[in-house]
Length: 140
Image (cartoon, rainbow, N blue to C red; front, side, top):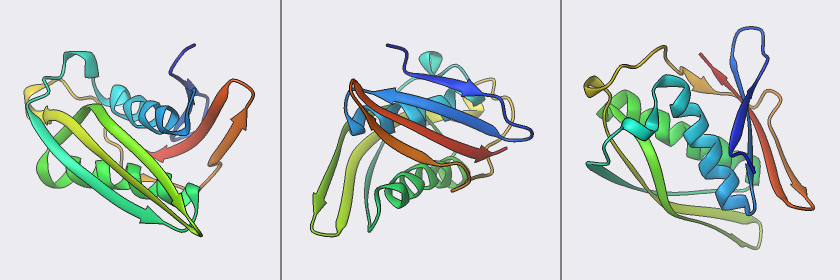
């Protein structure tokens, strides 16, 4: 099973990511975004950042998760290459996510382009027979 693919979009980056679990689909969505900027397989995992967020909707959780990774790119220069121990829990009407983002400073790599922000445009999270499919559009 492929992890993600890029779909045609007029001006932005549209990613369709797959996962056997919702957690795996979230990870593949994020890595798909960073792979657009540089080959994440070549990025050293020298910096670790803990992420902990919560939201009322699963779509909001995805948005906030991706936005947090972009914020770390903008403020710390962290290009995320791997996401470890991602856990999503649902308690009553609230979702929470914890994980560890691993990567390195983008200045050490050939980075093409920039992701400006996450959008809710065309965002979808679907549960299928074999797992989950996420589609998200990133403003580039």
